Picture 1 (cartoon, rainbow, N blue to C red):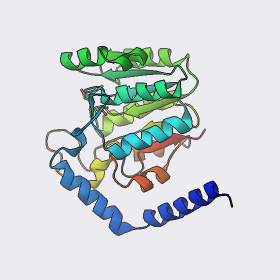
Picture 2: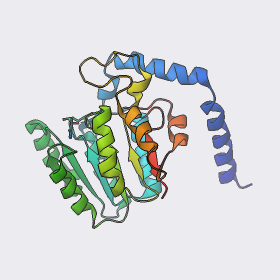
Picture 3: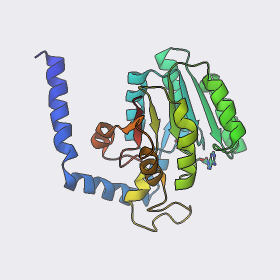
Picture 4: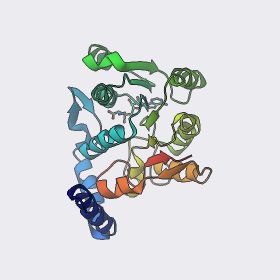
Length: 245
Ligand SMILES: C[S@@+](CC[C@H](N)C(=O)[O-])C[C@H]1O[C@@H](n2cnc3c(N)ncnc32)[C@H](O)[C@@H]1O
């Protein structure tokens, strides 16, 4: 076996063993819960803009972009813009002329200005409105028509009803072999009542929406290799869905 294959084999074996380590999985969720006390996911920026993610999820997004080579990334939930700036910068590195289109129900003026002045804005289109509003979805679907490989990130309202509707509306836009990402499935694995300032909770979150959605389709599967190797991830429980047909 050549050294590259040898390395991959050893890594796959270690990951498979880690996937069965229930103690490490529990420690990881405990760590996430403990770190969340300090709003850990707010600690990072990408090219100067706050990105509300674990660094692990940022690293895996880079792997997915390299593997899939999307020419369009659709994002719901812009906030400070770090995630769309990240996606735009990945397009820049791929050098395929790729674009990002994103929607947020409330793009705050200071965020809008900072994003619009950012050098990575050149690949980005921002829309303001609800991600499940028919006109917004139509605008995004029309924009997506010109692209060959589309990836989607759903990071807006994390209630079951909203994410389920987003899955119905946005999964048809995902290209075969590409992904739709569901950050915040982790809510299902935190204690009930933990989230106090939002309507979502155990039993009502992106994880429950994803599970309900997966019962209706064979076109998408959880890529559990990803969440198994991450351990610390907003997408706990398999929130990286791959379109297979
Ligand atoms: C978790 S933040 C997004 C973080 C961003 N993706 C990042 O990684 O930095 C969630 C955002 O979703 C937006 N949002 C909430 N409900 C929405 C809706 N119905 N449609 C679109 N955006 C929504 C909020 O205004 C907020 O900015």
